[in-house]
Length: 335
Image (spheres, rainbow, N blue to C red):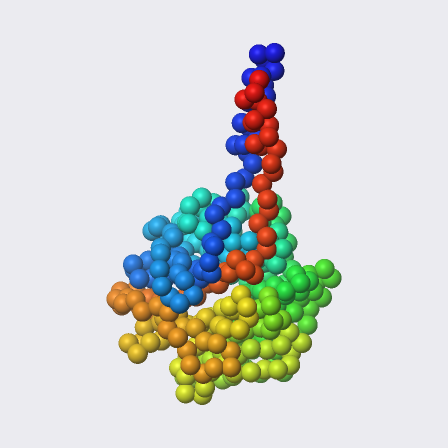
């Protein structure tokens, strides 16, 4: 009987230690973003009004491109902290910045990741000798598959399609649509192959079935300030500019969970890149970050950039923990 009791205790403790405990999901809406305010690119979190900005990562490497899991339990981001490989790769962490771990065992140059709507897969860019490719991988890091030539993938609301960018090598950047099941592709925008530039911040709203991106119709360095925000229906219709003609260069759009607003990058009155927010249908933007960043590593490095916007009201339900743990432990204590 004593041996049976000890076996039950050991077996129960094994279950408790091996079963993943859910991280604490934010109870209010939160924006995760990247900032270089400490002369190193780190990941921060803040409220949708810009208040309560808290640093999550504390590493000498660069941590960028954070994105929430559909349940809010994890944050996926890219980092070059594996200095032996000297390239980016994908990492996960809890919403409080703890429990950082790499997604894949074998390090490769992976970045620009996006979660599938069900949270089981990720799409991302992977740079190889022959160019940059779009991959789909499982979130446990056990499988990955090359599916297209391009970068900056983003999932459709139903998870059946992925939009991505191609044509960077000849300055004829276009938005493409990939059918996840059949792997067939089509060009969505612009359909005519002419010089233009679409920024890598392509995002598909999960509530409105619209794409947001920043577009420069004249792909010349001298016209860089012409890059500004647009939205487009997923069938290629309804192209709409978001801000007025007098707005400065705008990049890296991020959808609100409701699909009624966008975060984006724009320089402030001091010529420093900050995060702004604008409601669709309005021409008045709100500045969310206002950090002084000294020019140590150049203008491009010194920036605040939006990553992702999470709201528990629009999140997937968190998987419940099994109740047999407490039940079994109660039975063991009674013996």
